[in-house]
Structure formats: C-alpha cells, structure tokens
Length: 93
Image 1 (cartoon, rainbow, N blue to C red):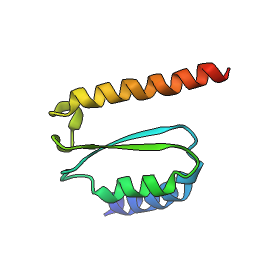
Image 2: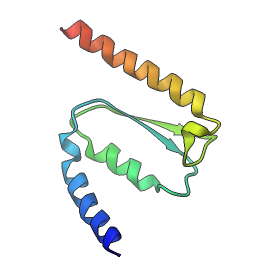
Image 3: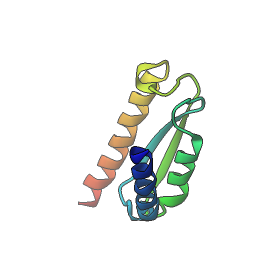
Image 4: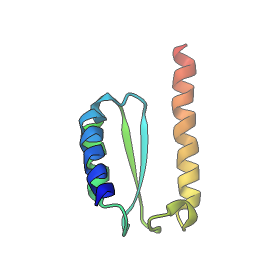
C-alpha cells in the first residue's frame, strides 16, 4: 500500500509539471497493452504543451514493444526523429 500511495503522489507531481517539458517527445504506445493504460499517453499529449509530442501507435506489439513485432518500426522511427531534431539544432547554431 505504501508503494501505491507513493505512486499516487508522484503522479500528481508529474502531471503538474508536464507543461515544463521543452524537449521534443516521441511516444510509442501499443494499441493493446495490459500494463499501461491509454490514459497515460493522453495525459502526456494534453499536458506537454511547451513542446512537440509525437505519438506512434503500435498495432503489432504488447507492453514490451521493443522485444515484439514492432521493434524494427520503433528503431526506424526513433532514428528518424533524433536525426530530424539533431539537424534542426545544428542548423540553428
């Protein structure tokens, strides 16, 4: 019960500070996940208002998607995302 109560307090702090995120966010979410509810992603999308949040839905994986069928897609999209923002940072400097 202590861990659950602690997690509830942590969630309040995290939700209150989501607007402070300034780095671009790439979020992967399995359409069918028996561990993490879709609400978590929705809260991030609504709360991180100071940056870009890109959500990628994974149709062919469950909770540990990097070890499931969508792993190649995750790696490919992650690399493209990093390159996109690395290029924009290097052009700005």
